Length: 462
Ligand code: UDX
Ligand code: ADP
Image 1 (cartoon, protein in one colour):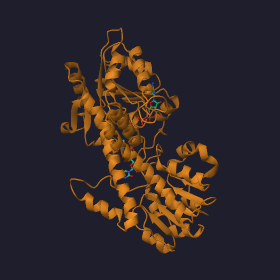
Image 2 (tube, protein in one colour):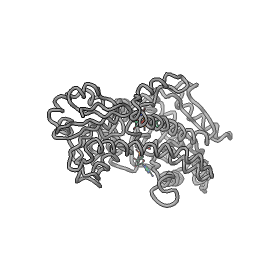
Image 3 (cartoon, protein in one colour):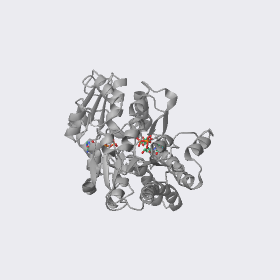
Image 4 (cartoon, protein in one colour):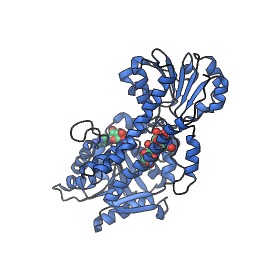
């Protein structure tokens, strides 16, 4: 049914963000027989996708884009034309947490999704498969199907859920070799046929036994639950980090000891200043909201505590800083090493560095921010306290004259800086707060620093 008969399938993706861009680039690179078009209403974003300066930083992405762009991968702002020609439409528009009205602060804001559904109805002239790629509350597919199929053109839309599990920074590797691909559909004949059509795309490079098919509600819910479980592990180990600091136990040793139990597993047990990123908090709050809306209050409270522990960890970190720096940080320069929510990305959404900076600014400290990729985003995030903030792209310059360094992001380059030189140029006593536990604390202590790791005893000179 596709317009461009040169290609076996005509696929489009609405929303050229962190999910849509890399996912579609991977599909296009793996499947030259398909035409893949990514559309977005944001013209600047599309222009960037068509240049060598992609709108997001993701290792390996530019190579994959270059391999397919102009051949079978296209980026465009003409949403209506792309919809008209497509057989399969992936939708990966943003679904932020609602900031207003019923469910504010918890429920997903579905206005972009609904607007997209209406755009699809308007521009379509034949039957299509709609693929939910954005993370959505369970049972959204049903609502979308109602909007889509309430058309008077006699067109049938089949909605399939295909949540994306890629993590930022490793997106291309995750897409190349996913642990699993999940596709949920209605169990009707039309639903199963649509499901098979999406399975076919991934089967070009993903082994069949890694492609799971489920009913549509399980697929939607599994995405929220996967993120909730991952975040729960981090909150669990972070809660133990607080206990370790009081008891002289060492959180790495505890994590290693429990992680060796194959039933627990070793990953996602790194104690940290807290989890960030666009997904974890949003998806858990979404789960909390859904549980509440079904009257499952205990379930809601259980998952909400994962977010509360994360907030506590950030607060606790700043409280320690203030306490050990003689109960005042007013007027003191504090260098933040890293602002991104994790290494290898410029993304700062929900980054713990945002809250930490705001708390430090409230205490009237001067916060100097350095990050290899996230400076532009940091500037936008910190508009409300910008008079207390400075930026320095060179970490040595950021630390010069500072009373303390706090490591916010685990960038590899922070491990190999010349800390002797940094120490010499800092105010004394010089402090390091390692919110990621990536530095050699003993060596830093020998240089003269007072070192405060997470979840282990401090290395102090007083
Ligand atoms: C996450 C999920 O991993 C991915 O499957 C989903 O599709 C989107 O959400 P992402 O947000 O990109 O991916 O990053 P992730 O690597 O999961 O890290 C999230 C946060 O947890 C980061 O702030 C990270 O620093 C933190 N983290 C992770 C820890 O603090 N400790 C850990 O052990 C692991
Ligand atoms: P994610 O992390 O889920 O990929 P992003 O915010 O990075 O989310 O990307 C979502 C993209 O969707 C944005 O570039 C935004 O401009 C785009 N978008 C939102 N609504 C529409 C719409 N109605 N039509 C086309 N694109 C849209």
